[in-house]
Amino acid sequence: MKRYIIIVALALAALVSCGRKETSGELPMFWTWMEDREGLDLDSLFVQMDEAGMDGLMLFVPDTERYQKAAALAKEHGVTLYAWIWILNPRGDRKQLLETHPEWFDVNRGGKSLADYKAYVNSYKFLSAALPEVREYVKETVKRVCEIEGIDGICLDYCRIVDCVLPISLAYNYNLRQDTEVYPDWDFGYHPAAIERFVAEYGYDPRELEDPSRDPRWCGFRCDLVAEVANIAAEVAHSYGKKVCASPFATVKLASFMVSQDFSKWNLDFVFPMEYSDFYSMEPGFVYDATVQNNRDKGPGTELYVGLGAELGSGLPALIENMDAAFRGGAQGISLYTVAGLETPEDRAGFKAYADSLRKVRAQNGGVMPALEPVGYAPASGTSLNPFAHTRLMAVVERNMQRLIAGDPIHVKSVNGMVPDDPAKEYPALELSEYTQTLATDRLLKYRVTDKASNICFDVLFPVYGGLISGWDVRVVEQ
Image (cartoon, rainbow, N blue to C red; front, top):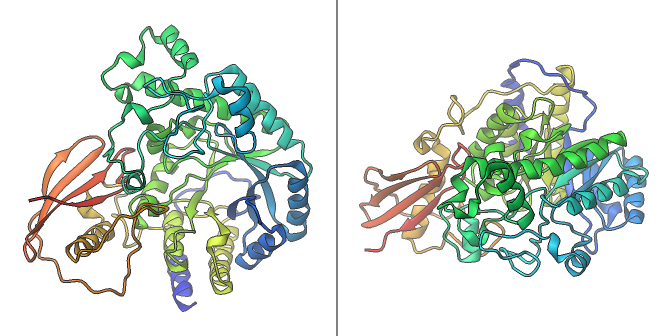
């Protein structure tokens, strides 16, 4: 507990006001997403939230009765309840839609439909944002949820297309080496309805281009289709007096490239970009940089919160460092995927102490969380694309060089494609040569370096799509 109190004290001591913004002050500050998986005990969920000091819940459940039970419990526990709706990758209706409307499902650049093609995982069954029938389906889904008594708002998720590239470490789960290149099998948004509309508007077929992923018109067009669907959902919810948030990928620019989510164009009240550092750089500087970018790029009427992962085993101290990075970047609140990642009563108590201290700061500042100065994990200038300016990122990279020299794996089939580090294990010291840059593009930086003690040579890769360092990989160069 002492570690957590020190982090909170440092955060409060570093508070710096950097300009006020309009905010309702009514939104909960600490949220969690939760899916009604088999065996979920709603009563226990709300008890865990009480213990963690969480006051907002974004919940997916399959039927009205379960939502009504959750709404009653939320009211009893003083929790704001939003319906978590999977917009273009429907959760509850997926099997039925595959049987009745296979023509609604999206198509990749090679002409393969998700109705019968597997993109990464079986659950990736996205509908085409171009189809009027799909838009009507989305509208009716949101209406149905908004009419459930006790639902305070909605959260839009899976409002996107299939990932054209994966975070660089996660690709190992699928035996892929994409290295930021967009290949036809994972390049979606090519439903005939979308192609027809694009050709009518721009006069050419994007499939005839050498690399459609670099055509700004085609990329912007797909983002606009997704934005139109998001705004249809938001319009319906707002007509019922409900607030609307969303769970897009980590930043506006990264999400636009990876999954056609330009959420700066979505009519949201607030937003939770999923800045899961364990999927990207594995250090809190990524959260800080992403939050700085999102404050710059988000829609002017949208309040910025941040989504963080809590189920990758990093523990509460690492989670608090990531939350601290988000608040230093200008976030107004946090959501965790999920509260279940706070596994022990001690974890939940530590989280509550942190959350309560920052609620006091926000209350003292008129309902606005002031920005914090960056400390330690990121250059003061913000989102630098020089990896060597990010000292903690380079420490992670070089730690994994040591692991490879010792014969340890660094990649494994896991939730984020990485073997968890054992910080207690000791490795031989590195004796590195100078890093030599061997590639520099708008998507990838690559360096070569040799450990002179072991005579092992490494390639070090840093994806930079989205205008920030969004991952790394270390690979032994075969001699």
